[in-house]
Image (cartoon, rainbow, N blue to C red):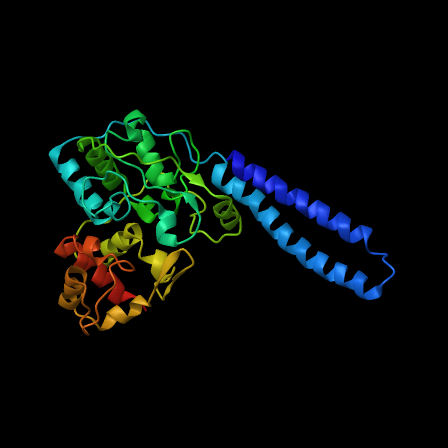
Length: 316
């Protein structure tokens, strides 16, 4: 935070210096030189002001206290709970919190590497007992997923952009139970250190940070191959991240660009399941596993994938 604050103050100082310089040379005797200074100075002032303003806004968005007090609860460690949490982790969490897309959730690589931008240290942390969560309560882990806040109530830059916040209370408690059940794996993942570029991008709304807070309580529809349950699954899997809010296509920036999912309306249930299990669409197109993580999403059960298909084909 300190370095990003210093960078922001430096750009504010540059704005002031630029305005002073333009004001000082506004009465120069040579009209061409005078207007050249005014035009260049004005353009420079606009750019520096944009960076300064969004730097300040980004500092607030990234570092201001976030979330409500962590709830007090102890995860139910029954075999059923742990198994459900393992299933969710294997479908969703491994995409980020693992280097090889497999359990356990021993931590991933720097998100900056995938974005090909100098975003700073944005590693997905080691969630096994050998990582930072050994000092967290179950309620603090729950809050980290639901509200994107760390143990001290500060924003987690990566987690606060994830649709895992849409998990029901029961499913999220199952994930906490699985996290507590994992064997410790020694893998150091540095704490988040967003770069100044990340701070400016956050202030300008160029990062997929989710604003507001989800409901305190989320109840999932009854599990089954229904469109209601499919909508719930699509909500926490995060289809809208890359396919747009209405699933009509979206993404871009630091996210992959996803196509309009209305195209799935022409797919049979069997064709949809096969595409998520083999990576090949019913028309023979090979899905890019880096843009569409079908290898992990395909670990969902037949009923779960059938539910998502039912939801997608129901879209207008």
